Image (cartoon, rainbow, N blue to C red; front, side, top):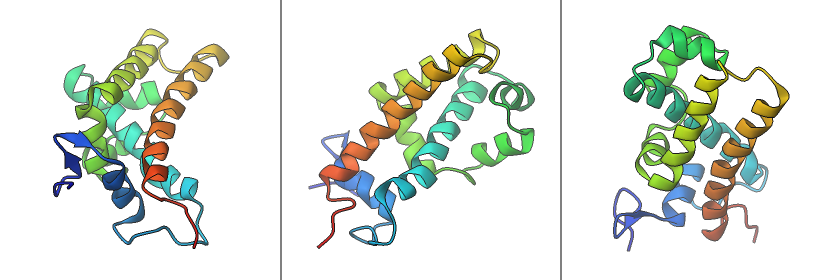
Length: 149
């Protein structure tokens, strides 16, 4: 049985991800595709995890992070305060080694290229984001996310 934080024996479960993606309301509404909700929740959470990693672990200023990501310093503040993305998913992204490893590689790619400045960097970055998102989407699908009756 999953604990309150969505873990079984300390591991993230598909059920807990679906609960996060659908707000705990059961199956997603038929009018909304699973990817729509995932895009609104997961992608901002990935960005929030990346922002938090850069600010807290790499000790970058919010201004530097904003410049690196091509966003405003106010956006960095919003991510840091949990006003964008889902703080509980962000926490899991930084806690689970499989996901944190991707967040760290994304950060290193951004730092080494001074942001995304060319097509190759963009494709690599996009592949990393998509790999995390698709893993989380797989977890949601396993729990019945997007099924219709």
